[in-house]
Length: 134
Image 1 (tube, rainbow, N blue to C red):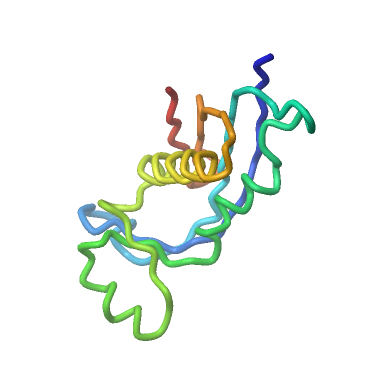
Image 2 (cartoon, helix red, strand yellow; image 1 turned 90 degrees about the vertical axis):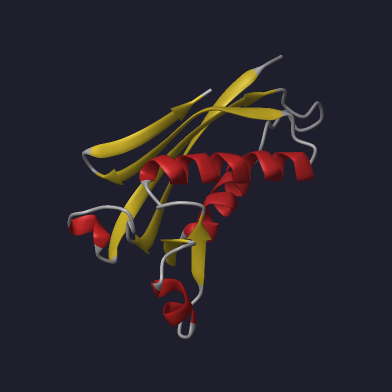
């Protein structure tokens, strides 16, 4: 039996876009809303596909963090005072959707969970989101 589940997680982060001309080139913060759809075969004993709290735990690695492009010259200086999560490119909502999806797949592999992420949506503001579908 294949089932689908949905989980919403909100995180607060700061970032900037190194290769962007405009306000987002400055370090600033967002309350990101992350919506995750997962599908797969639930565990035969528990009838759970993946515990909702585990989805939240995967996404929470970004909560209250500074997220910057790995090429950003601010990274070494900020690391003198605070941890920085670096990304392979500018940490846009599009890239964040891809990274979170990859994190979820890695978690599922590590825990023997047979699930896919057919859709993930990362809201950068109440009026703007990026959606990744498979």
